[in-house]
Length: 119
Image (cartoon, rainbow, N blue to C red):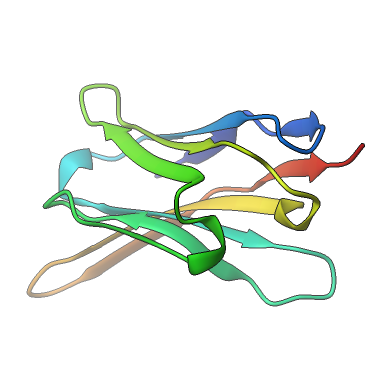
């Protein structure tokens, strides 16, 4: 059974940084699109950043220039570096791995890691 495990969340002050990690027990990790999503209390889950198998990245406008998504396929790990954190970045952050073949879609989620930005 595939496991996706996030780590690296915590409580930080505004302006500080965190790096989230996402370790996935999948084969062919490099073929997956990695996505970081977040959900704040009372709000819908939103896509924060994605990185596809070709290296193309996308970011929600509110984090552009502050967050960076990367991967290390040799370690089966994805990362989200978050700089200049703001209170509005407070949320549970989830990692998603997605891959589509001709016959099947593979879609896996982690359990989430809490990020709290507060002074």
